[in-house]
Image 1 (cartoon, one colour):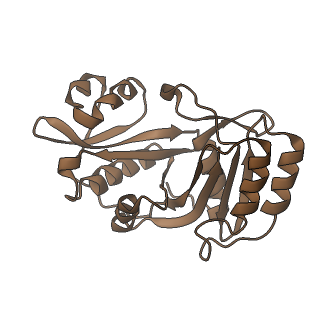
Image 2 (cartoon, one colour):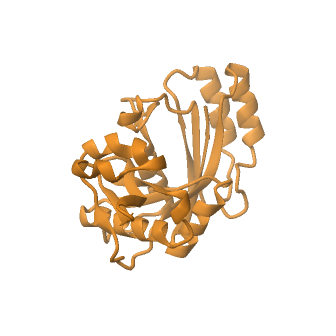
Length: 236
C-alpha cells in the first residue's frame, strides 16, 4: 500500500481494528468474534510523538470519562515514556470506579515499505486444520473465517503461524505463534513478513503490536525492521 499515514493516523486505524465501537465512538468489544466478543477495556490510551487518542468503554460513567480526559490532555512522548507518565492517575480514577482487572501496555509497529518475501510459507485453509497440533490446535476454528492465515509446515505439522486476529475495513493486526520446539529459527519473522505482504496485496494496512514484557516479540519486530509508531495502554 503506497499511502503514507502519520503516526497518529495509524493509532486511530489500529483502534478501529482492535475494538468494536458504537455510533458514539465508545468501545464495545475486543474485535475477535471467534473468542466470544469479550468486553473492551474500560480505557484505552494510545500515544505517539504526534499526539495521542483516548477511548472509553460505553458503560464508563461521564464523570469518570471527564476525569480521564483531563489527565489524557497532558502531552506525553513515545520516545521518553514506555508507559504513560500519568498512568497512576489513570489507574486511581478507574480503581475508584471499579476494581482493576488488567493493565496492558506495549509498543505498536508499522511495517517498512520494503518487505523481503519469504519462500517457505503457505496459506492455510479450513482443510488444513489437521496440521494444527499441540499448542496450535486451538487455532483450528479460526480457519473457518475468511481472514488470512499463513504458516510454515515442518514434520507434517504447522510449526509457526501468523494470522489476522483483529480486522477492520482499513487494517489487519497480526497474531503470531510458534511451537516451542521450533523457535529461534527465524520462522516467526518469515510468517509475519509473508502475512504483511498478503495484507498489502489486499490494499490494507498490516499492523503489529505487543507488550513491553514480551521481549521475544519485540526481538521479532527488530529483525523484521518494523518501525514503532506508538504505545498502546489499556485498563480493564
